[in-house]
Length: 224
Image (cartoon, rainbow, N blue to C red):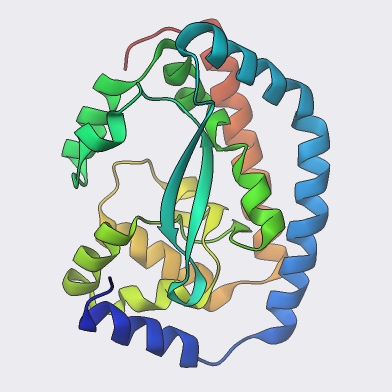
């Protein structure tokens, strides 16, 4: 259950002025591009499904609760990259400790999926459903939202927009960037979001993922 602090953040986000025309244009792009990307990725997604089945069996997908726009919870989808039961073992870790423990839990296929970011492909279905956008602040677990809402007074502003499959923080920095730095980039996107900025962020992400995929294909079992 949300605390009184996070409830006040959710209320502020829902009452914030909307940029209706920009957000409507971005939603149209989300739907059109997600359908295109799913068509292109259909064969790779089938191959990933078979690889997971062959090496670590079911479940194929990871399903995790995340905080969406306006504080609404939704179920985020990813290809499973960790050993079964890892979610419980990782517990409420955050930051560098979470990164370290997560690395120890990765499966062989999962290490390659993480390195290439192809584990994120099922989130295209979240985008189609309206849970997410292709570009925006990365989704966060409810337990971490409670913690960060207390530590970062401006954190509520992330709830003004849909969480994204990619975002400024991911394009500009790595996974281990501090939460305060990530928030600064997220707030920049929220304030300046536009069709042009959305397309540039997607293009940068695509170039980065292509490079990571090529490197991952050469060393698929490398332990990070």
